Image 1 (cartoon, rainbow, N blue to C red):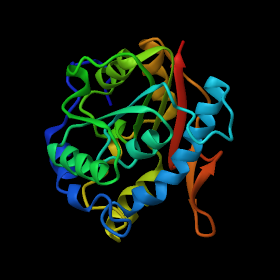
Image 2 (cartoon, one colour):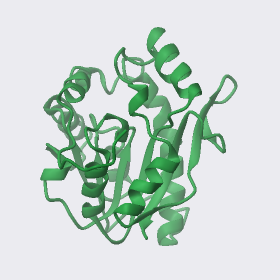
Image 3 (cartoon, rainbow, N blue to C red):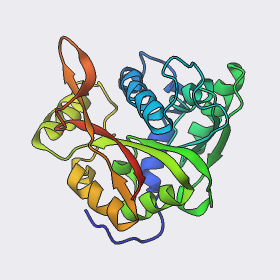
Length: 244
């Protein structure tokens, strides 16, 4: 894994892979079933982070009213739509045109107004967002430093960023790549273990661009609990990031 920035972030083959899944994205029993199981876990973390960052009322059903939110690598909108329901003015960015089309259609069907854009976040010139999220995306980009720099550029002063990504460990290789893809829990070719990033590596890149990663939480799996927040970072982790 290299940290030197090349300026572009999209891998064409990754965009094509996920674009093929677009029409199935909202099916909780389809090829994106694992994302549907993961979404409530990361939303719980995100809600706690929102309340802590802005010292809001945890009972409020729309804590993001008056705030702008950006989700990068949004797929067909699994996170954008909950953010909109929390009150944010949401922009979703994805590299695959098929995903943006599916996301736009689904949002329209639910009466949600979300600004979806197809392209490379490093080239879109986005800025001024109170909340920036990118979930399970860093491992798929061509240049991690360029990608995270683009996220930083989009973040407003005093803003909140939340990132999640698989950890590069023996456990993640066994469960997320070899086991999950072999038995069909996720589509074959979704993960490339060598592109996973450890919390320590991610923290260093973020520090280099003026951001601070706060103590991450693990997203673990257990037969009795399924996917859940944990102190175990060996499979996947999610973290709050702010300006240093």
